[in-house]
Image 1 (spheres, rainbow, N blue to C red):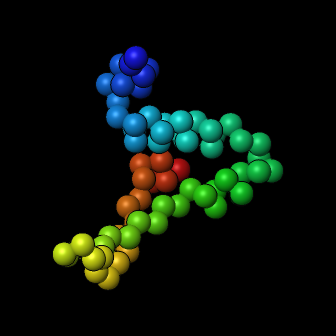
Image 2: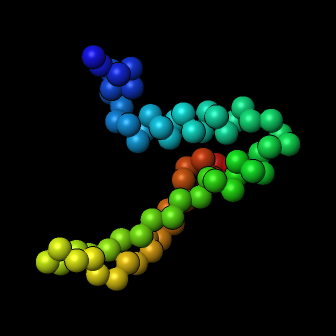
Length: 70
């Protein structure tokens, strides 16, 4: 069984990003502020050594093209 997004030549992250962007555009205006709160992404990186995680460091935020265009 092949997924439509895979048949279109996308990976899952690309597909989910497009789906999220489409959903944000159709949300009712009175709910957009709630949706905007969830838009941010926080990523932490931890180096593992001998099966134990080291200190976790936040990854700098990368501005998305959608934010830059708006």
